[in-house]
Structure formats: C-alpha cells, structure tokens
Amino acid sequence: MRILGVLGGMSWESSAVYYRLLNQGVGQRLGGLHSAPLVLHSVDFAPLAAMQAAGDWAGASAVLMAAATGLRQAGASALVLATNTMHKVADRIEAEAGLPLLHIADATGAALRAAGVRRAALLGTRFTMEHDFYKGRLVERFGLDVLIPDAPDRREVHRVIYEELVLGNVYEESRQEYIRIMENLVAAGAEGIILGCTEIELLVKPGDSRVPLFPTTRIHAEAAVEYALAE
Image 1 (cartoon, one colour):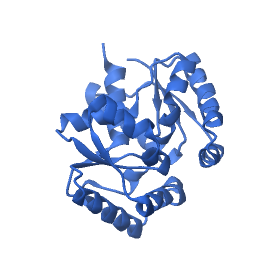
Image 2 (cartoon, helix red, strand yellow; image 1 turned 135 degrees about the horizontal axis):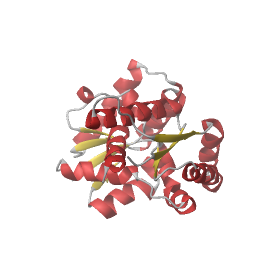
Image 3 (cartoon, helix red, strand yellow; image 1 turned 60 degrees about the horizontal axis):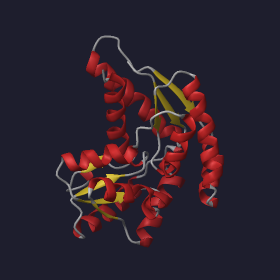
Image 4 (tube, one colour; image 1 turned 45 degrees about the vertical axis):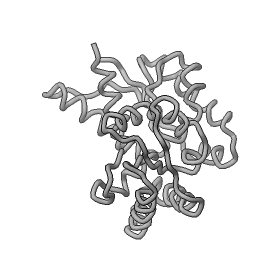
C-alpha cells in the first residue's frame, strides 16, 4: 500500500473523522487486521485561523508547506489536506512538497458527475463559498453550476463552523438553521448539496435534505483509500 501523508488539525475534530474513515476504508477493502498506512501532521489551528481571518494566506501556506515537506521526508507518497478551506493554497503546498496532492474538490466533482448532478449548492466557510479556488475548480473541471447562500446565510454557515463545530459543539438550533438554508438553495434549483467544510458532517445528516448530500470528508477519504490501494 502507498503511505498517505495527512495534513490535519484544521480542525482536529474533522481530522479525527478522516483518521477513522481512512482506516475503515482500508479495513473494509482488505479485511482482517488491515489498516491505513499514514503519517499525520496535525497543526495548531488557532494561528492558522487567525491568518485566514486576516487574509494572510501566504503565512498559512508557509506553515502547511513546511508540514508537507516533513510528511514527504517521513515517507508519504501523496498528500491528503484534511480541510476544504486550505485548498485555497493547495497548489503551493503540492509544489513545495514535490508530492501529488489528492484534491478534495476533484473527488467531490467526480462524485457529483457520477450521481448525475449538474447544479449543486456549496456550503462551507465564507472563504470556500466566496473565493473562487473551490467553486471555480468545480465549474472549470467538471462543468457544474454552483450555487451559494445569500450573504446573511453565508455569515450564519460560517459562524456555526468557527464558533461551534470546530470546538466539537453540535446544537439542534444550528442544524435547523442549516436545514432552512439548504431548503432555500433547493428552491433556487440545487440538485445536490455539497457539505464543503469537513466539520459540517458533524451537524448535517442525510435525512436533513430532500436532495442528495455530498459529504466532502467521506468523499475525500474514499478517494484517498483508492489511491493508497492502487496497483
């Protein structure tokens, strides 16, 4: 099996889900006592979150580039960046590390296409929803039409992520708000909902939407397992 290098800690709550999914995926495929060969670098999220808020993407990418280089030196064959938002600097990380980076938007776009979804709504941090690094990739590479919530709803989606979910706090009132926001997006024509922040899957479940949900943590982990087991 190929060794996966996981860049985690953004937040550790979702990185723990990645760890479980990667190991479960390999175990299900190979059986017995098999698990995923991984090297993990889990960062301190507080400084990175402050850099995000300040628009210091160069500083944030420098932290992750150094971590990615360490993963390569530890024997990783490819990088799994265990967050949607920091894919804003994925190209820089990949170039610095000299390893292939298994891009979360590519795995998600492929899943949407396979499901026959052409118009999808994107939920995530405000950076993921408003900047073009994610939805632009879905449009250009997969021909998708990507919707995002209106400005007040984007603020609420972002607030719940940073003030609740990254701390492991899951509240029913926030789940109901997300359901309302998703219903508005479906009314606007969304055929599927991209849970484009790795923590959202802690809050939103399949029964919460009348259109298919695309949980990016699970989709990304499945793609990484495929890579690790490829001949």
